[in-house]
Amino acid sequence: MTDVRTELTPGDLYRVLKRRIKVVVAIPVICAVAAALFSLAMKEKYEVEGALEIGRVMDVPLDSPVTVAYRMSAVSTLVPIARSLGLNKKPGQLRGLVTVEPVYILTKERALTRFIRVNVSTDDAGTSAALARALMNSIVAEHYVTYKKAWDLNAAEVKRSDDGIADLERQVVEDRARLDELVRTGRAGQVEIAYFATYIADKETYILRLREKAWDLKQKLYMEVYTRPTRIAVVPTAPQYPTGPHRVRVVALAFFVSLLLTAVTVFIAERLNGGLRGESRNQIGDKEGP
Image 1 (cartoon, rainbow, N blue to C red):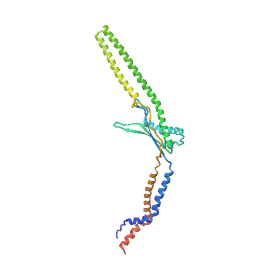
Image 2: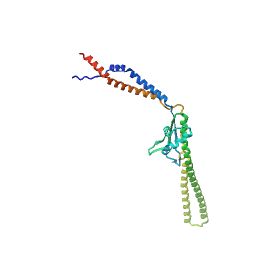
Image 3: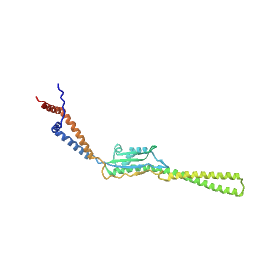
Image 4: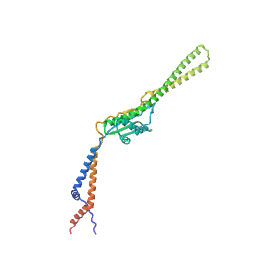
């Protein structure tokens, strides 16, 4: 018994496509039209993005960015803000409109973050921008209370340090005047005078250390690098054009999927009725002859 192997030729494929021309044309056209209608029925989306910078006092963050991101995306925060803007959405829908995540900056020592990225996507450009700004402004207002208290406490500490230094400087002036008087009148011996002069010198050295510490405190308190309130680093603005849906991508994806579906459909149809196999065997029989 001879082993007959069937091998498809381009001519066989052409005849199959010609025989199944209705399927080959209908499936891609139907899929493309359905995808186009589906994409047209989808509402336009306007996505805005903003960034919030967590404030700090004396180089100490006012809050954890991870905690702030969780609080901003919580339903208890989103619902009152949405209602104030006239946005009637269910809590679950609101959480789907807003994405809040901390932005990490990798360094050699550790991952640092002081920024929070806020994305809002709705079917109205103005609503998206307003919701993003209102959400960030709520955190700015909340953090400002903490910032003001911390700043006042540290400013009072700086003032106490300045007052203490000023008091010590007055004491040094008085001690030097007393030392000059002792030297001039000779009412104290050389040992007592030397001891008193050393005491004054030690006090002046201590004042210098206090001044350096006070200078560091003032730098961290008054320089924006170390102390600044929470602020909106990137202001969300309403986009002029919708960011979605991507209708061309939807139609293109549907077209490529339809081609795959067409190939599978034709293959199954030919296998079921034996078209491919029978046609190949007939061609082999014609070549071998009677």
